[in-house]
Image (cartoon, rainbow, N blue to C red; front, side):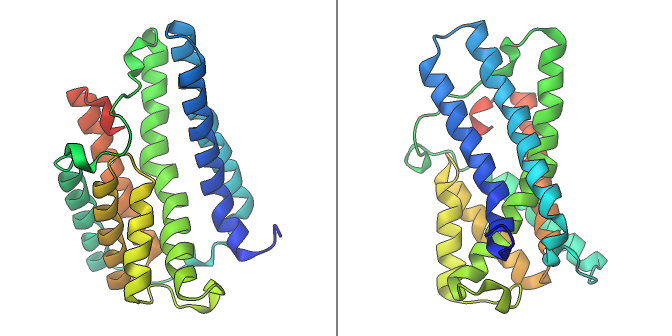
Length: 225
């Protein structure tokens, strides 16, 4: 099973989601206080390390990242989409578009240097690690799998209405701001159709997440994280 193309693309995503579950369970099980805050904060670096290990193990399997095609026009599209998704995201936190509650972990409860260390890891995870495994999972695997379960036989960036809409809807369910997630899924899909490049989708996704992280740090709107 581990040699199957789908497994290499699903495992990093599954590891990430598993640690989100652990994070949520700890948040509910532990009484509020410094100990709970520290333990909850610790799950994020472990989550990122777990995903990085999975990506590194299967890295040679990701043919979609070995593209030769790379040009300035595609990069411009990626930067534009990344910025556009960020701008729309921070304006789409309407009550009906939120799944679950808006309670968010505030890392400022961490003492001194631990706060800065956590922020550094959080920004690195959001802007570098998350875009890689999510784009491999959503744009390379799910988008093609909906067209044909033998997804490696489907050309990267192949378009069908069902795959375009369903993958974006599923991408939305991964996020607390589900409508913003659907919007992002649609725009990242369009970027893939335009550039035929998972790398460009990773760059766009990384720019969105980096800008969002900076915005959160500047405003204290931790619910966006």
